[in-house]
Length: 436
Image (tube, rainbow, N blue to C red; front, side):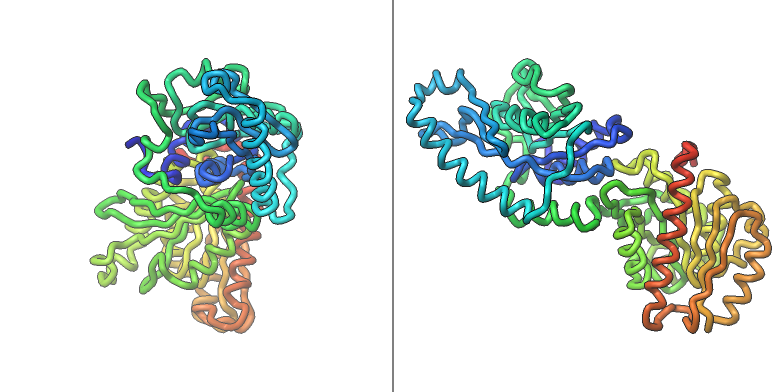
């Protein structure tokens, strides 16, 4: 088997398409099996996800063999070689087409839910399926997206026969496939799990793309100095940047507070990496909990690991630190100079970063609760030592954990605005963000 399932296939296919990120592409998945693959590609490229509803016209006595395909807008592609070889009559072809046209219309209504398709005019469009056998469906899809105004069409599939380029010649402007075995009987033989994709899964992918739910959510393993750490990456479609979280003592990547802030950043179009900077065995060690240099080194390792993930290439990044994690975030920012786009501290202890504060170049926002008086004073003193663009936001009446009504929502809004502003400026500057 070459792929575990369609999700893995999508991730591996996305790695072959990173050169298209700057082309502002649209990813079009073919329902149903191609949509989970396309969702991974769209998430990795930060591109919008759309569908092209296609129905295969199967030979009556061998339905898995395509003699053609139909699509939205009246598109119709026939495979004359298969039709002649199977001796298909005009009446048989018409009967199959009527049946499939009914199903195509049902699916188009169900999947789109009244939403208009993405405007393809003048865009680079990636047509994605879970594999290619005869090519009839893919040809119909490429014809449809061209009719919708695509300026350039790229056909991308995880697996196809060795001769697929000659079969698909002239279909698209670019053909991409990472695996083309010489022996090819069916797409499913190259997947460990090739179970049928249901309407519910298709709808979930499309709904996630429409409402800002992260298109990519996966766990990462991070090899850091002296430890192997766990992280959780979430990337929305067209993410403007990635925020790495450094939590405080007694907390973890499962912290409800940090997860609520991360979810709000995702909805604002920002990627997030929640991670633990200490292992479970290290957490009781108070010396390590209050060792900002150790935590900063591990935050730097997580940043380097993140740079290898599909979909993060070229994105600005920043740090969100809470409590003692804020010192680690600022220490790491000081170490990496101008390569960090922004830092936000929530109820943090920036004072623990000591003399490193003066070396921070990343724009830094310190958020403190108005009722957290001791920490507020420490933040005021720390800000006086910063030599970068900075701000101090006080959330009225909020205590250290921001448990008051709307307090944490205010933190998330302030953080989203800060990261969004500086990520945009950083990206426009065109710096090399990932050389760490």
